[in-house]
Length: 355
Image (cartoon, rainbow, N blue to C red; front, top):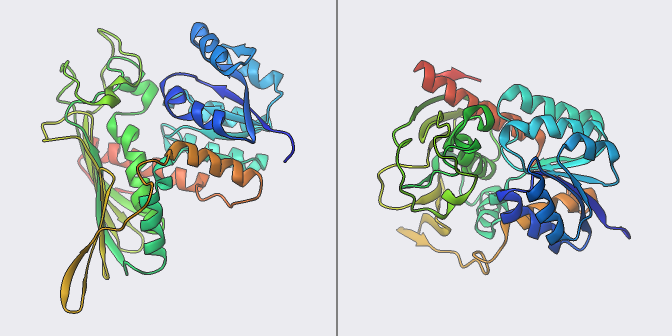
């Protein structure tokens, strides 16, 4: 295209500043032309950094005045679906920070709005764009792992509660704790490498044991705005077990705080030809050859230098330009939110939940 895509951003707090802002600034085919945040002083500050003159505190005003092609949503979780639906219905292509929504009904409304509008809706799945992840996906798609029949994934922290007392730890605004905050990342990554099988049932458990803890040892605890004497009515650890329609299974564990040795994120998959482990960015393939067990460490150049969020936003623009087909679909988002909601339900009832 000759003209740049004009972007209107709604929510310019931590995740926008840490991940989205640089991606839009670096993209040669896009420019931010409007920003909106309920905190006017923050909106004005970011507008100044971006050289943007249009500043709003109500996203409805921004959508009504228009003058852009893309809406980028970086608000607390509760408002993702509301704003995405409004943006799609107003005729804007929409990119949204994860999670898609706080419940399956809202996620489905988003998918329906995208289909009805004919506009592109994409929700951030940045971990798919890490070169190690791309390697594992290609290995699986080419049959190098054989049948992937089971695995486990998680992101566990020793002390890494984000924005304690603020919206992250307030269920009404966030939809939950580390399961919905972190689970989207690695459940999605595992399912994507496995070929996006359909979930059919889940069991889960959740715990809140560190709501009164004041220690932080993770850089991720700096996300969100902390509030003294604020709300903490979400879990700090969740575990679960997912069954898929092809017979495969996935164990999960996500925590903001637990007594472990170190913070760790991981996806481990077991296939009939090979297993794979991606743990804290380190990749390993486990198989056998010439009558011996083999451990292989692929050399993926630049894997630790790729800006995953930036690559995800590049993919979004590539799809708008027809250079690529969306690898992240609203339907996958609906399945993800169904899984998370069912794990919470199972944790409350103590029973398996069918999907």
